[in-house]
Image 1: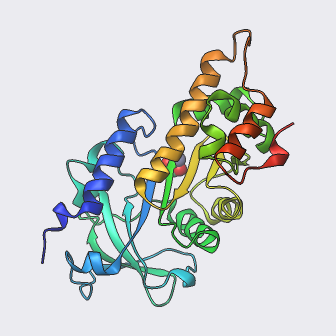
Image 2: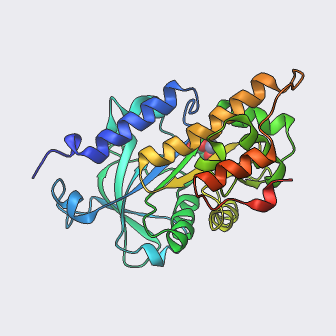
Amino acid sequence: MKNILNAPFVEEMKKTCSNMYRLGWDERNGGNISYMLDEAEVAEYLDLGNVIRTIPTGFDATPLIGKIFIVTGTGKYFKNVEDDPENNLGIIRIAKDGTTTELLWGYRDGGKFTSEFPAHLMSHMARLEVDPKNRVVIHSHPTNILAMNYVHELDEKKFTHTLWEMCTECIVIFPEGIGILPWMLCGNNDIGYATAEKMHDFRVVVWGMHGVYGAGKDLDETFGLIETVEKAAQIFMLTAHLPRINTIRDDELRTLAEAFGVDYRKDFLD
Ligand code: 2HA
Ligand code: ZN
């Protein structure tokens, strides 16, 4: 059996958490990641018959029965994942009842997965319906996206349109736009259902005055997606209080989207 601490998926989680921490997006225990793993790959590192303990999710994830995820722990800090992955991360399998998870590795101090795990599972289920390759859900508190929430209308069309204007590549990277939820209480199933409903149409969902959910096929792609939205929000925040002299016009956005062949939200342009 190979050493789990050298597994590429553990390495990727360590790097992603450190990068996000250093970007200032995931202070204290802010943010969480779930990444669906390939069973055969995990079997090279762990005895899949050895369940350390079971942990209930309080939510029926029947479509994900048997799926294995590596997930950040509740109350744990992204800052600390790199130095102590076995305590701050866990590898869990959705048990046959659909509402329990089987811990295969990690959460060494008796901990469990993020309090947002039901929202993650619901988002995975929603994204898999539209994209069978989806494996990653990331929640984060990127600084400028959050700042923008306080000074920009939380309207999906207007918010997306503003971001598309901020960097030329935006309409190509997130042509479907940004889904937005109003402020809601986090850590429960209601916000999970609301997020998952948005995830049918969007890979990025803003939680009003809280942060963002992003989904994608791997950690690089999902991180890059959030990074691009955050960059656009940063340009907005750097310029929002200054007179606007230039902008990318709607006809130019249309030209871009058509040149790159992306299926964009035409109704989000004026
Ligand atoms: O896990 O970010 O929304 C900490 C959070 C909750
Ligand atoms: Zn949060």
